Length: 166
Image (cartoon, rainbow, N blue to C red; front, side, top):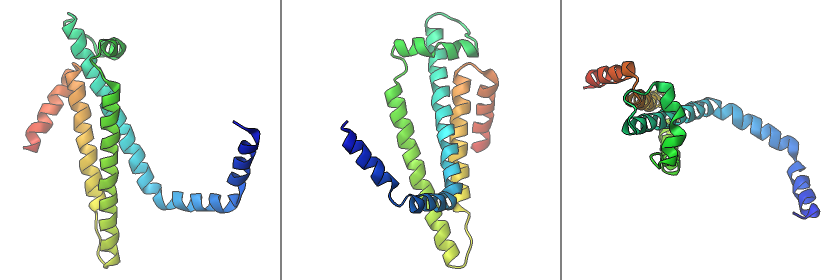
Protein backbone atom coordinates (compact mmCIF):
# COMPACT_ATOMS: atom_id res chain seq x y z
CA UNK A 1 0.00 0.00 0.00
CA UNK A 2 1.29 3.47 -0.85
CA UNK A 3 2.65 5.43 2.15
CA UNK A 4 0.77 8.58 1.14
CA UNK A 5 -2.55 6.71 1.20
CA UNK A 6 -1.78 5.28 4.63
CA UNK A 7 -0.90 8.72 6.01
CA UNK A 8 -4.03 10.26 4.46
CA UNK A 9 -6.23 7.57 6.02
CA UNK A 10 -4.56 8.02 9.43
CA UNK A 11 -4.95 11.81 9.22
CA UNK A 12 -8.63 11.43 8.31
CA UNK A 13 -9.19 9.06 11.24
CA UNK A 14 -7.71 11.65 13.57
CA UNK A 15 -10.04 14.42 12.38
CA UNK A 16 -12.49 15.38 15.11
CA UNK A 17 -11.25 12.47 17.23
CA UNK A 18 -12.64 13.98 20.44
CA UNK A 19 -16.17 14.07 18.96
CA UNK A 20 -15.82 10.47 17.74
CA UNK A 21 -14.70 9.31 21.21
CA UNK A 22 -17.58 11.14 22.92
CA UNK A 23 -20.10 9.77 20.41
CA UNK A 24 -18.71 6.26 20.92
CA UNK A 25 -18.94 6.60 24.71
CA UNK A 26 -22.55 7.83 24.52
CA UNK A 27 -23.45 5.02 22.13
CA UNK A 28 -21.80 2.53 24.48
CA UNK A 29 -23.76 3.83 27.46
CA UNK A 30 -27.04 3.74 25.57
CA UNK A 31 -26.55 0.25 24.17
CA UNK A 32 -24.65 -1.23 27.13
CA UNK A 33 -27.49 -3.48 28.33
CA UNK A 34 -28.22 -4.74 24.83
CA UNK A 35 -24.52 -5.24 24.10
CA UNK A 36 -24.23 -7.48 27.15
CA UNK A 37 -27.29 -9.43 25.98
CA UNK A 38 -25.84 -9.93 22.50
CA UNK A 39 -22.46 -10.98 23.89
CA UNK A 40 -24.27 -13.46 26.14
CA UNK A 41 -26.19 -14.89 23.21
CA UNK A 42 -22.99 -15.05 21.19
CA UNK A 43 -21.45 -17.17 23.96
CA UNK A 44 -24.56 -19.38 24.14
CA UNK A 45 -24.47 -19.90 20.36
CA UNK A 46 -20.76 -20.74 20.54
CA UNK A 47 -21.44 -23.30 23.30
CA UNK A 48 -24.31 -24.72 21.25
CA UNK A 49 -22.05 -25.19 18.22
CA UNK A 50 -19.19 -26.59 20.33
CA UNK A 51 -21.44 -29.09 22.09
CA UNK A 52 -22.96 -30.08 18.72
CA UNK A 53 -19.43 -30.79 17.45
CA UNK A 54 -18.73 -32.87 20.55
CA UNK A 55 -21.95 -34.84 20.00
CA UNK A 56 -21.05 -35.46 16.34
CA UNK A 57 -17.55 -36.51 17.38
CA UNK A 58 -19.03 -38.89 19.98
CA UNK A 59 -21.28 -40.47 17.34
CA UNK A 60 -18.31 -40.78 14.99
CA UNK A 61 -16.21 -42.51 17.67
CA UNK A 62 -19.08 -44.95 18.32
CA UNK A 63 -19.37 -45.53 14.57
CA UNK A 64 -15.63 -46.31 14.51
CA UNK A 65 -16.11 -49.06 17.10
CA UNK A 66 -15.44 -47.23 20.35
CA UNK A 67 -18.35 -48.52 22.46
CA UNK A 68 -18.63 -45.82 25.10
CA UNK A 69 -16.15 -43.00 24.52
CA UNK A 70 -15.52 -40.66 27.44
CA UNK A 71 -16.60 -37.04 27.14
CA UNK A 72 -13.02 -35.79 26.75
CA UNK A 73 -12.36 -38.44 24.09
CA UNK A 74 -15.26 -36.93 22.16
CA UNK A 75 -13.77 -33.45 22.65
CA UNK A 76 -10.38 -34.67 21.41
CA UNK A 77 -12.08 -36.49 18.52
CA UNK A 78 -13.49 -33.33 16.97
CA UNK A 79 -10.53 -33.02 14.58
CA UNK A 80 -10.84 -36.62 13.37
CA UNK A 81 -14.60 -36.16 12.88
CA UNK A 82 -13.89 -33.02 10.85
CA UNK A 83 -11.32 -34.85 8.74
CA UNK A 84 -13.93 -37.55 8.11
CA UNK A 85 -16.27 -34.74 6.98
CA UNK A 86 -18.80 -35.47 9.71
CA UNK A 87 -18.54 -31.86 10.88
CA UNK A 88 -19.06 -29.11 8.33
CA UNK A 89 -17.92 -25.97 10.14
CA UNK A 90 -18.97 -23.67 7.30
CA UNK A 91 -22.59 -24.84 7.46
CA UNK A 92 -22.66 -24.71 11.26
CA UNK A 93 -21.05 -21.26 11.34
CA UNK A 94 -23.54 -19.99 8.76
CA UNK A 95 -26.41 -21.40 10.82
CA UNK A 96 -25.01 -19.77 13.97
CA UNK A 97 -24.59 -16.36 12.32
CA UNK A 98 -28.09 -16.47 10.85
CA UNK A 99 -29.49 -17.48 14.26
CA UNK A 100 -27.68 -14.54 15.90
CA UNK A 101 -29.10 -12.24 13.21
CA UNK A 102 -32.63 -13.51 13.92
CA UNK A 103 -32.00 -12.95 17.65
CA UNK A 104 -30.96 -9.36 16.91
CA UNK A 105 -34.20 -8.80 15.00
CA UNK A 106 -36.22 -10.26 17.91
CA UNK A 107 -34.37 -8.03 20.41
CA UNK A 108 -34.91 -4.96 18.26
CA UNK A 109 -38.62 -5.72 17.93
CA UNK A 110 -38.95 -6.26 21.69
CA UNK A 111 -36.97 -3.10 22.52
CA UNK A 112 -39.12 -1.02 20.17
CA UNK A 113 -42.25 -2.47 21.75
CA UNK A 114 -40.94 -1.65 25.25
CA UNK A 115 -40.06 1.92 24.19
CA UNK A 116 -43.49 2.43 22.63
CA UNK A 117 -45.17 1.12 25.77
CA UNK A 118 -43.11 3.42 28.02
CA UNK A 119 -43.80 6.41 25.74
CA UNK A 120 -47.52 5.70 26.09
CA UNK A 121 -47.20 5.80 29.87
CA UNK A 122 -47.20 2.06 30.44
CA UNK A 123 -44.54 -0.44 31.23
CA UNK A 124 -43.50 -3.53 29.37
CA UNK A 125 -41.13 -6.42 29.88
CA UNK A 126 -41.15 -7.83 26.38
CA UNK A 127 -37.33 -7.69 26.15
CA UNK A 128 -37.07 -9.82 29.29
CA UNK A 129 -39.62 -12.32 28.00
CA UNK A 130 -37.94 -12.59 24.58
CA UNK A 131 -34.49 -12.89 26.20
CA UNK A 132 -35.67 -15.56 28.60
CA UNK A 133 -37.31 -17.59 25.88
CA UNK A 134 -34.35 -17.45 23.48
CA UNK A 135 -31.80 -18.13 26.24
CA UNK A 136 -33.79 -21.14 27.46
CA UNK A 137 -34.01 -22.43 23.89
CA UNK A 138 -30.22 -22.27 23.57
CA UNK A 139 -29.74 -23.86 26.99
CA UNK A 140 -32.02 -26.75 26.00
CA UNK A 141 -30.06 -27.22 22.80
CA UNK A 142 -26.77 -27.33 24.73
CA UNK A 143 -28.22 -29.85 27.23
CA UNK A 144 -29.52 -31.98 24.35
CA UNK A 145 -26.13 -31.90 22.61
CA UNK A 146 -24.36 -32.93 25.82
CA UNK A 147 -26.83 -35.81 26.19
CA UNK A 148 -26.07 -36.84 22.60
CA UNK A 149 -22.37 -36.69 23.51
CA UNK A 150 -22.84 -39.46 26.05
CA UNK A 151 -23.29 -37.39 29.21
CA UNK A 152 -26.06 -39.47 30.76
CA UNK A 153 -27.09 -36.92 33.38
CA UNK A 154 -27.70 -34.34 30.65
CA UNK A 155 -29.77 -36.82 28.65
CA UNK A 156 -31.93 -37.42 31.72
CA UNK A 157 -32.20 -33.69 32.39
CA UNK A 158 -33.25 -33.05 28.80
CA UNK A 159 -35.94 -35.75 29.03
CA UNK A 160 -37.19 -34.26 32.32
CA UNK A 161 -37.34 -30.75 30.83
CA UNK A 162 -39.13 -32.05 27.74
CA UNK A 163 -41.79 -33.76 29.90
CA UNK A 164 -42.24 -30.59 31.99
CA UNK A 165 -42.69 -28.48 28.88
CA UNK A 166 -45.61 -30.53 27.57
